[in-house]
Structure formats: C-alpha cells, structure tokens
Length: 631
Ligand code: 0RA
Image (cartoon, rainbow, N blue to C red; front, side, top):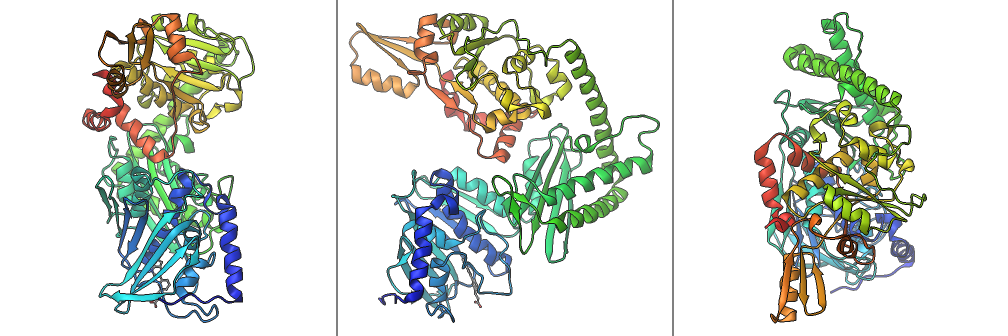
C-alpha cells in the first residue's frame, strides 16, 4: 500500500475539510436525518452527472447492515491519473477538494448537484471511513479515507472487466444525531431522480430488511405526472409533453388534468426540487394561462358570459412537472430553492405557449375539456367570493366571534395555548371538565365531517362542521390563511382509537393539508394518543397505549389478579382519567404531524380520501400497523 504524500497544497485541503466538519450545516443543511441523507445524494448526484453525460445507465444504492451505505455506478470511473496541477491522483482531488466535482472535465457542465452544490468531498469529510473503488482500464483502484483524510494512496487492488465507481461510506458518529438510513426517505428522492432523468435505472436495496426497489422510467417526467395522478380520474389519458433547448438550457414540461380541484405543479432546476418556484415556474404558469384563454377566445366557448378564467381557475385539477437543466443556475430564497435566472422565464413562457397552442389545435377534445374546466373554475370562484361575502356580511368568518361549542382557555398568549378537537359530545364533555382551562381549549366535533378532498372552497366555507374550526383557530382559510393570527400553538386532534376515529382524524388532516397548509408546515398539528388499556393489580394502575405494551406489562406483572380494562372510546373515560392519560402535558402522548415530502403526502391524501376504493383498501392494508388498535 502506498502512503499518500503530503505537500503544502494539502494544508489548504485540510483547512477545507476542517471547515466542513466544523460547520456541517453550512454544507449539508444540518446533522439530523435530512443532513445524513444528504450525504448519499451528493454521491448519487455525481453518478447522475456521469449518466447525463451519456456514460452510465445504472446506479445501485445499498444500505448495509454494518451502518455503511454504498453507491455504485457503471460509468467511466473517476479518473485516477495524476492531476496536472494538484500533483495527486484526480480521484483524490475529487474526494478531498471542495467543489472539485467533475469540473476538470471542462466539456460538460455539472447538471445535477445538491442544494449546496459542494460535491462528494463533503460526504467524505463527514464519513469515517469512506472508501472509493474505481473500475477503469481493466483495474480496480481503491483509496480509503477517514474524516476526509486519505489513509492510503490510490492503490491497484485487483483486475476487472467492468467500469464504474463505487463509494462506500459510514457517516461519522461524532457528527450526526442519527445514523440510520431510511429506506422510504431514500426511495422518494431516488424515484424522483429516476423520473427526472429518464432511462437511468436506480436500484435501492436495504440489507437489513431485504427491501428492494428499482426505479427506471422510460417516460421520464411523463411517467412522473402519471404517477402523481395514479389514483385520480384524469381528463385525458396521455399527458402533454413539451421539451426543447434554447441558449444552452434544456427544459421539459409535462401536463395532465384530473377531475379534482387541486393544483399540483412541481418544478425542478438541475434536478433540485425548487420548492419556492422561480422563473421557470412563472414562465410556465403564464404560458398555460395565456394558451387556455387564447383557445377559449378563439373558439368562443364563453359566448357572452362575463366570467373570465384566471390563472388559478385554469390550474384547478392540473398536475404538471416543469424541469429545466442549465449551466449556471442561480438560487435564492429562504431555502435556496427559488430559481432566479431571468432569461428562463421568457424562454419557457414563449415556447410552452407556442407548443400548447399547437397541441390544442391538434387535440380539440382535450383542449375543450381543459377550457370547460377552467370556465367552471371561474364560475365557482365567483360563487365562493359571493359565499365569502355572505358569511362576511353575516360577520362570521372575520368577526372574531367564536363558535358556540368552543370551551376556550383563559390565557390569551397564543404561544402558550392548545386546542383539542374532540370527537363526540360525551368525550367533549369529559374533556371540558378534565382539562386545565388556563391554557387548554376544547372544541367538540359531532356528526359527519366533510371530505374536503372532494369539495370546492365555497362548499368548505359554508360547511357547518368546518366553520367552527375555522372560527376557533381564527387564522382564516385557503389563500387568505394567516398563520400569525392563529389563536393556539398546538392543535390536537383527539379521536377514538378505532376505524371511525382514524377516519375523522384523516378527514381533519386532509382539511388542514389542503386549506391551512402552513399549519402543517409549521408543525402546529398533533394527534392525541389515548390509552388502549388500563391494567390494575391491587393499588397499582398502569395505562398502556398499544397491544405490545399491554403484553409486555402483563408479563412483567405476572398474572396474579390483574384486571385489564379496554377503552373502546374516549367517551368511556371520565374527566380525571382523560386528564391523566390524554390531556396532561406531563403524561400524555402526542404524535406531531410532520410532512416531509409534499409529493408523498399528496398521493396519500388522494388515496385515503379520493373516489377509488381499491387503492384505499390497499393503502390501509399496507399500513395496517397504524390501525391495529381497531382489533
Ligand atoms: C470526469 C471525467 C471522467 C469521469 C468522471 C468525471 C466520473 C465522475 C464520477 C463520479 C461518480 N461516478 C463518476 N463517474 C465518472 C472520465 C473521463 C475519461 O474517461 O476520459
């Protein structure tokens, strides 16, 4: 084994790696689960670049059972020859110099690249150990690093016929709060990458559980749109597909409509999900609005009617992906996910408009469907406005008046308060008596909750089950929702631990997700977990929250004179018990509702709340552990 040589240049390299280890958040956004997974994405991005350059079509990611993870591609292999100016092997430069990436290959620009665009050296710096194998020119080369510092030279360790690069790394336990790679978390991003880069097969395996996925989509973003609409009724079968290149920028758009009213548009720049949008998204939206309006005008679909569809009417029920790839993307915004390259907007706007008009001309049935839906959307917006004005006039939604059934808390400071949305009047009654009324408010819910997944906003606004919730929270709804006006810090859904209770919780979550989204994004929503059993033995009492926990305690307590009481519903608990088990911040269990991935959440709500029964049954069966409480 050759020892790496140290020169003055190495001092600079060490300083760079040190900076990464000192402030990992600056490079990978944090050291929790998200940052941990970012390590993988940096490595995968390099392989994606190799694929986009046309030299690789397969990437395999394996979660190993010793805590390491490996990423292997079948590209050309990172060059191992001496780097001309750095005087060490090119591989070592890529692995240890910040921003080195594939830059020494001038011809191709780096298309993918993580949010922070720092490259695989960051993954290396935060791993211990990290090992890279390169298959190239008939040989297997290897270099091993610890915390980014080479422990060996680039050694030849064998012969091979294949070409490619494999990186195996173990995240440094002194840096990360968690070291467990999450199969589902990785799946979401790797699937997204497979959609955005058609023809690349990305395989994910988990050696611990033997789970395996292969993501490969010949249709690219067309497949992405079909995937998003999978359980929805679509207006036309084949998604629209528009693509082109201009000024060195590649762009691609796919559009399909469903019968719902939600707007689902995801935009990407260089494979990065631009959550905050940007110029590509603005250009796309403008083109869509202009094209649909132009078509409506040219076909006189509106006759003499006064309504005119606006952008949001035209985007009711749309599912679209906008993806651009460009040389020097400029990102801004709070999370650096807003594309700001100004030339992109005009290019996308004009080309998408042109191609959409062509599509409409060639597909009059689809064009008419889209147009009629937009017109209906405009009419309903009109109706919603009138409904809002009516309720306003009745001074309900904006009067600050509170619903009659609300038992409010006494303190005013919204950062200290909680509201429990309680299923059923009897549980509501016990909760009102059992709570700490200084900071806990109770709003009982009764009757059949509206399924907001299938309702337009005018119906939601006027619904007598939903209105009390809007009033109690005090922050408005929909586009006018203002999280700063929220009257409570925690909104706790409290329903029975049975199928009906689950259903109500899901209906409420759907409502929050669709109409009060910041509530979810800012982490205000919780689900209470009431106990399932009360175990009693003489004077000792123990509430348990799952069947496993019950069995565990039965074992511990022995079987002498144990009395097991099962709670079928919240209504069976008296006020004291409810306080003890579900309301008391010292003892209760609350599950925070977290939505990491909007795409997954969107699909989940569609499946749970949409029209199709089969996928819903399948989903519930797959997730049966969450509703085991109903047995
Ligand atoms: C630049 C040049 C060449 C290969 C690569 C970059 C490369 C980098 C990575 C990172 C992960 N997998 C990769 N595969 C390839 C090769 C240039 C040549 O062979 O002429």
